[in-house]
Length: 277
Image 1 (cartoon, rainbow, N blue to C red):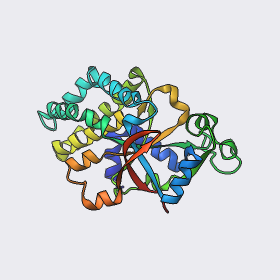
Image 2: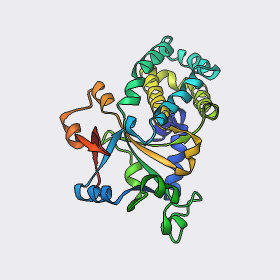
Image 3: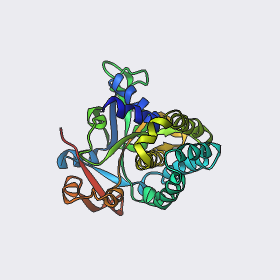
Image 4: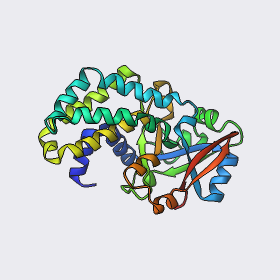
């Protein structure tokens, strides 16, 4: 990522940039807790499944992110953001709002996810004799691997490398209620206002795509603060979005194959990403 790319990312995705820098600096690892049966399937098939967000433990998680974003955008901060981006393109706020509202049910219903959590102490002590290296995290065992469970412990490199080879993206989860979400949204608004002269030459299309991505990640990666101890990150795949942009090619579908499977007695579409070095 160039310095310019990083500067632009700090405008639209400040929370994600900070979390990525923290994980890299602390050499943090990630853990995926699952049943031993599923763990064996992952190792044998050398792939890991992404499941539809509507079939997560609690679909209200995605609805929660939408509620937080709505509350912020429909308030004074949203007005400020709209006024700022009019300087880039006069009708940009109307286009952005109309298109995002039209896509929101696709975002919530046609998003495929895999969840991992940070492994190690929050202080960054992830090597040596850390508590989680010895025992894992009790709450994660209970929630995701209660009987005969296993945990895959993985380096962060594959999750945070700068590549679009899979068309999937890693996003840190933000834990917030609508009121807590306001400061995070204001950070984006302030950054847009402060850097509006930089954004003007880039044009309405760039700002439109940057804000659409920021809004999608906000919906897909905001959870209730009660789950904060999970320190979750999500691998997010949106085939419908790829299709609309012409990126869902034969090569892409071969790289991330889709299959109808019965999981937990529920027939469902899944996508698989490689679980190899």
